[in-house]
Length: 369
Ligand SMILES: *Cc1c(COP(=O)(O)O)cnc(C)c1O
Image (cartoon, rainbow, N blue to C red):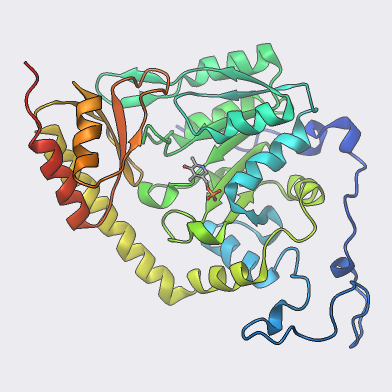
């Protein structure tokens, strides 16, 4: 059962770095509300440069393009003022760190094996990373020890807890009720970040639904995976409107290039979204097929259940499997340096033909003596 979401929730601005509480950031020319028809306030060129297709690039882009923000908010079930668009969710991770953790101080919590960017951003900022590893359970796969995450977060005074759901590279989905309980426990102490980069493939409710009752949750979404726009670098952070305002002030003046805004708007147009959902369904079906075939293959020790667009696979000889796949022209992600995954590869779900090639390469492997 869900804990009551009406339990009071603290203004997340109390968690923002003290030295940034009155920080206004860069005030760009684009930010003015003045009305006019000759814009001579941003030192832009009065002419286009003459090359085709650049007419609309003469001027600086809207820092937070409203139509795109509206479409994204609708897509993710949020209000417009709860959403900040930026240069991929990678930027959102960095913004959260910079706004909440003192440079060279404070701490964040991660649950390895997990997405590497949380620790990279923390390292660059001089912020300590506290780890509470996921548990590898025999039946259900990887699971988060939420009680321990809460204990350690409070003991260590961490500012941000990075949860990845579905997890990368583990593929596991985290239960929303446990996320909510954790957020209640850490109210006024930390922001619980839920990275839903693979949310579309999980076909489950998003943590955005928790934002109605809890102010210390931030959800990361991206157009990079299911929406096939990794090259456009468009990601969103969805959180309490007051926190979004703080993050915006810490962001670059013009974070999203105009051509990227244009392609992102096309990607979230209703007809394209219908097509995207069909393709997500295809990936989900292929995921089940590939998993079944790999599980029955010699040399495969374990295929983890996955709610994302990849499978995490343990092999009796991961080196041989990696080489065999490579010989077949297939490049997969080697996980062998990740904690506890010394024998694992992460295989992205491809087209049915590509998945067949993966199956053929793995099925043909010799049984170890
Ligand atoms: C791919 C990925 C991202 C990166 O998303 P961008 O929007 O492309 O920056 C974020 N989190 C996880 C867990 C990912 O796997």
